[in-house]
Image 1: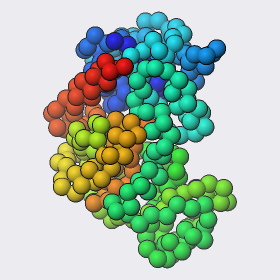
Image 2: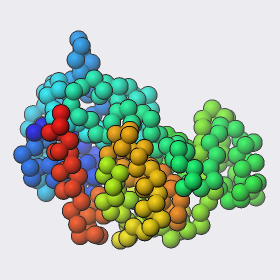
Image 3: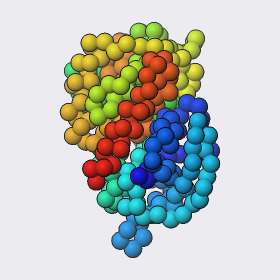
Amino acid sequence: MKFLFVIDPIEKLNLDTDSSIEIMDECSKRDIEIYYCETKNLIFDNKKVYADSTLIKIKDKKYEKIKSEKKELDFFDLILMRKEPPYDLNYHYATMLLEKTKAKVINSPHGLRTANEKLVILNFPSVIPKTLVTREEKRILDFIDKYGKCVIKPIHLFGGQDVAILEKNNKNIRKKINKIINNEKNYAIIQEFIEEVYDGDKRIFLLNGEPLGGIIRVPKKGDFRANMVIGGTPKKYAINNNDKKIIETIKPYLIEHGLALVGIDIIKDKLIEINVTCPTGLVPIKKLDKKNITKDIVDYLVKEAKKQ
């Protein structure tokens, strides 16, 4: 079998903790040839889609580049779209190119276009916090007047970038808002603040709508953002009944839109985000649970590849 990983520059990935590298490493234990490329390497040329791809060998998270060559996407049995946000126009165009192959693509290019990681939760109002999406400062201020302390996020970024707390009497509140909406040019998502975030937020990894495991990410001292990329600490976590209720609520949507590899974020009993582009957390879940969930993922990928 031949798998293509569409990723960010491999030289910039953390080989010890990156989930794409983790999946590659597990693939290397099977009879699977592993190729990678970046979105800039996808090409439509005379009725066919190609990738300037690189064949690698990987073992124990150490890789060796073997050769680079232009390959038609139909050459591959399975393609994993694992580029990190931002979801910009070039990301959008890449998903359109990926739809032109007969190879199985996970996650589905159409699903990736449909499921903005911040806004897809709006499909599930019963399990999310009080939420506002707007470009207008006045509406944001009115929302804070109504619900009190809130959090504001840019819609297109990830990893806790530019996420801020908004409080009514904070003298910098308008400055914080404008940093994201940029004179009402950009949309923002605003949610009621959940104080339990200081105890940690949950990252649960789903495979085709079923939970594989989870962690709770505890913010570093002085911060409310628990993302591991900015210093959050992962701790062992057992999925509870409320988490299962949320998972059952979103599962039909995920399956319908071909979103097989997903990481959901939950604070207390509220769904905060559904991460579909390049969900992380495999390595700490595997380590803390002492269970090789990556094997389950690769078993699934192989099965899906054989269906094509």
